[in-house]
Length: 413
Image (cartoon, rainbow, N blue to C red; front, side, top):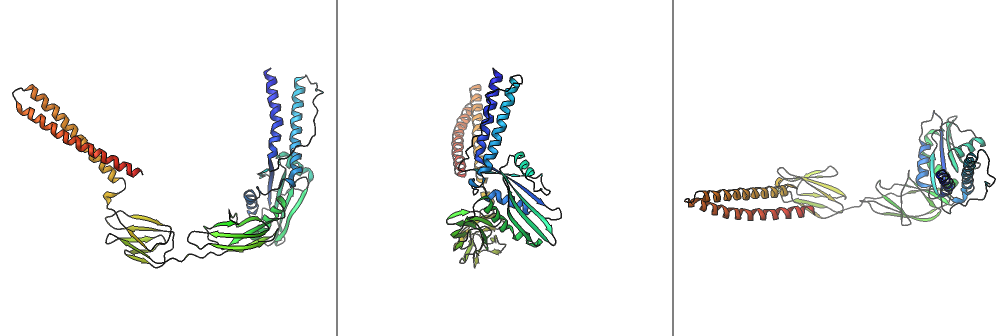
């Protein structure tokens, strides 16, 4: 009975797993580079495809390949079921196990899984049986082959997409020094092969290194200097701290690499007066400028940092993110160092508490001596004096405890 349950669970998983795989399109990548060529263009192409193509791939272009893989997975599950049935029936095959070749539906939206086939670094021969083996062995729906081979004094680049057959996406001959300049054409070839011809490629130059880029109001990220977008009119906006916002309206044709030069100008700010309440303070700006206070900075350029220091005082670091007319700094003495005030309050409380405990012990001692020596009224007088002193000290300890609590409360905020 237990064996039957195990077999049923195994069969259920065998049939369910292929159906779950319908949500993903598996694309392999093979980079074939001649040993005499030192180039990482294949790895860059794979990284760019992972970051930019996954959400753009159309299901329709690969629906037949996905269905073929799912049918193969279903067939394997059926053969496993037949094998188990024969093993349980002493070598006899049950007549009710029939494989039904009905079409498996593919979801409207498919995620993309990328697989880098690092084992195939040599030339892949153009043989259908080898392609079919690679597709089945790695459970792929398609794979890309990118090759870089020497051609006389040039390099020949080829990018092919293999599904049920082979489609050449790019075949170009370039000079060795042009390898880095052909990235746009390679990325565009990927867009055309895996998405639709309506996609284009935008390359943006001239912007600040820390700039944020938005297209039609939606923030985008440049990967390797490029971003895919649909052909048509677009508004490109670049913003960065310390720079003026730049915006341009462009018309991008489908299937082209459009280069947009978007130089950004630094913002011009007014003068800044930096003063200090102490006499000999020095200021050091984040750009390396050092001066004595008071100091007039003719043209400030936020964001920047101020480092103010003076002998006998704690240094001060101040971050300024926007332009301002005047900054007045106040340096603190060492005893106002962060945490020092709390420590001093803690020491004062412990000291007052110790005095109260000592006075309490003295009161007990004097009271004991006054009862031991009945005729000695001086001990009783000392006992009452100790009680008074202990009361005053206890009040002082309670006050300092409250002060210590207040300091820790505000410092935590």
